[in-house]
Length: 353
Image 1 (cartoon, rainbow, N blue to C red):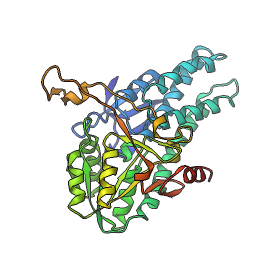
Image 2: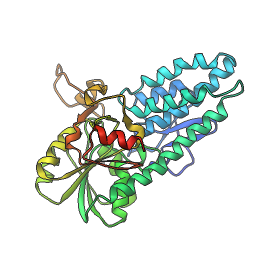
Image 3: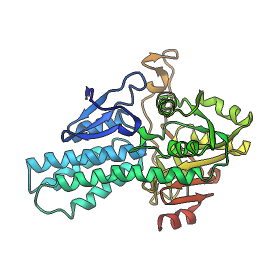
Image 4: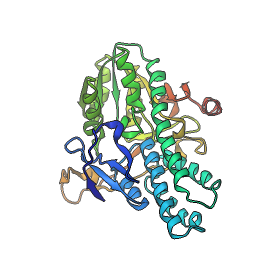
């Protein structure tokens, strides 16, 4: 993957760029120390960037994949104008394997599969690029709506806790969980944000804190294990998180550690909110047991910034996500509205809107 600098004002809302007929992704592995982009001229580099965590967050992964499909179609049509659809199936499978838990990835692939069947014999790139840009643009709009819905639930002023990064970096812009926090802060309802550092990739420390500081929103970083003590001390009204996949019954897959946060929140009387677009809802997964949980290399836990943190010979278990039961969720917020105390019937009704 080739690292490049672009003449753009770097922000969380410009982390995914299409310019000069190719995709550029802000390399989130380098933040906050360096602000550089990875150039993605083809679908192979796009898939590699998704797997390597250059881009992360379910909505952002779906958007990046959409642009990757445009690149795939361009190449396949150039090589074989009559058989490009069949040949491109290998590229779709490559993208699908990049991050198995993020359902937005599969949602985007399915949307493009449907679109491809409607295209004629000409160049498919204009139609596919228009679709990718529409997905990107719609995500920004939906996140703003989510932010307003979620902010309406908060009685302030209060402090909130968030886990991992569900901001502009993880989406097409504005964010899901951070979109709620941004909207509520603008309304005077949030006075402070406690951001879990989020081991082992430190998305809270490196990314969420970076976004909030740039927005002028007061943020304090804490170790993941400090969250329960922070709730016990009082003053925290909500835990607000995003999601990578929501099952049909309301079970929520999100960054590892979310389940423990939800248990602690219920014990301490702190409300628990999940903000995610409807593209994150997987009605084909009956409950959380049907959600595939990605596991990554043990070195990510045994090292920090490339330096060993434990003795040689120690092993590690490194699931990327866990599943929070719907019974621990007070509200799921989507671009369509709010699902209070989610269950299968409420999810089905919401998705039918």
